[in-house]
Length: 149
Ligand code: SF4
Ligand code: SF4
Image 1: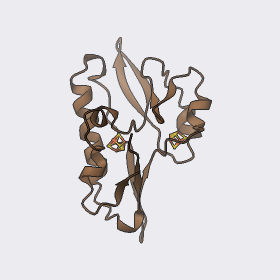
Image 2: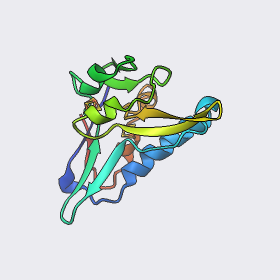
Image 3: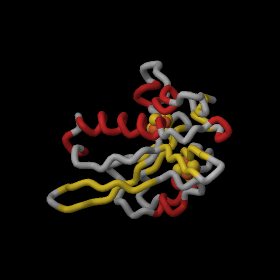
Image 4: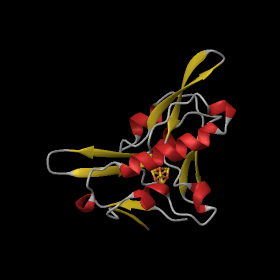
């Protein structure tokens, strides 16, 4: 499994990575009836100050805080990738609060005419990697500020 890493020195702040991540998520949700109403949130977030652009992304920590904190055990590690099991996530937001990198966000969806929350994070494009394709944010970055480990 390849992992992404970002070097802010090469980041233009173009947000191409965010757009790529969002488009992948949207295409996954579009074929899944249960997730069709889910808001799409990018899993790499470019923050900008006057002099610096920083693409923030999940580090898939070995001893992931989010995994330890989740009360329903919805977060697991598969091939070293920290993933959220949608069916077990109750949207409590504890992982979002606990992530030291601020890269878990909450998304909304509609079920039984009620609006529900669900946690949203990078899965390292596991579906693409299983087909020998690279993570989409990496392929989208024009300056290779995002590289693979
Ligand atoms: S979401 Fe945060 S705490 Fe969880 S694995 Fe990624 S970086 Fe670590
Ligand atoms: S590796 Fe895939 S899921 Fe993770 S931030 Fe990049 S595009 Fe998004």
